[in-house]
Amino acid sequence: MLKKIIHTDNAPKAIGTYSQAVKVGDTVYLSGQIPLVPHTMELVQGDMSAQIRCVFDNLQAVAEAASGNLADVVKLNVFLTDLGHFPLVNQIMADYFQEPYPARAAIGVAALPRGAAVEMDAVMVVGSSG
Image (cartoon, rainbow, N blue to C red):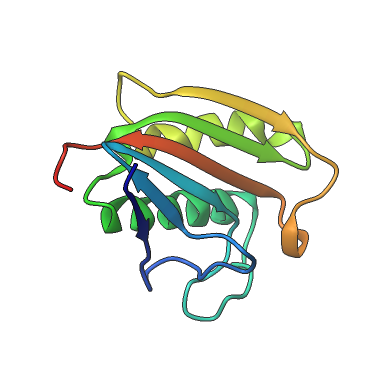
């Protein structure tokens, strides 16, 4: 099974022992993204809306590096330190996704890396191009 490691400078670099994404066949596994600004590696300034948008932007950048986009996402996992922000995730998600929407899970967690309030990872399927 051939694995291709996906990397882009348009998303935060990995802050641990993982890759931004790994492509196996037509499936791409996108690692969790928190609201880090790619070029500063600092948490985005602003409210929860800015954090959620930053995470979606980071996921989009990694998806594009893997020759896809968010429309190719088949599974999205959302991790929140406060599930009270879930309605806002739904609202903003509508700006990034169109029907048919991907399968999704929302999980409340006690803490996330770097003190972030939101993290998301995804699985997408793209055309077979190697």
